[in-house]
Length: 315
Image 1 (spheres, rainbow, N blue to C red):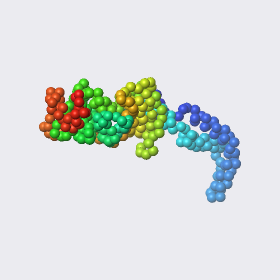
Image 2: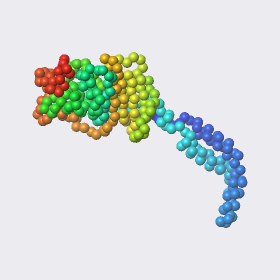
Image 3: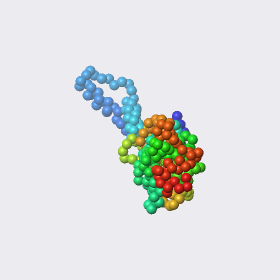
Image 4: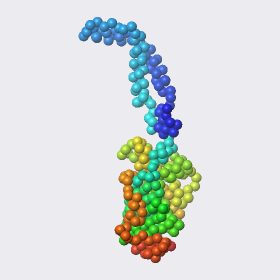
């Protein structure tokens, strides 16, 4: 029995019965006796006389015709399993297949609306492709802010920035000013919660899948109602048919200053990573310092050396 939540259920019942009824009617018009006489005559030319067995050959012929037609119907007439799925079922299957403890690496690009202040372009790495590695709510971005080093969020929810291997700076979420909080929000790709939000608050429809690569299904999601700054306004998801892995995401978020920010994530690999890769300590040299609120002056100096006063003003 097909589970009730199977995203690709079998065709609706009744097709086999309809095909059989049609073919039985056609088989009734078959002259089985003449067919048998022709076959027996051909066999007599090459072998001993053949005696027809005592069977109802009209029924046998009809049975063969029906069986053959049903086989054809199974491959040609019946709708595909993919066609039977809905966009919501595809997203639900991707959510069920998602593992928060798995490592994923994405290539990410950011497209900003025109005429934004330079500091925002630097924070969002506009126009530069970066690698975003994730495990649950942890992430690391390389290269980091300004195209140097790395930055990310560790297992304790702290944001760290390591512009070089000489020193790093670390902050709690409450210590970050709004622009940096926004930068963290767009980089922290948490696929599970994102899919939950899409299923709850978005209208879903089919989109055009990529022309190349593994067989995929594409879904377009549009938020119902008003969208506020920082929220996702719309998204496109590409899900691999066999594994139900989300292969790519395009997310559009409105900015407080106006316009839509477009983020594109493309899955690169799922290689397992050292947990230290998600921490500041994993991106500085052995014994090199990681400054937190207990060393505010040195922490600020790390950022000034990398980003300039216009970015760290208020940190």
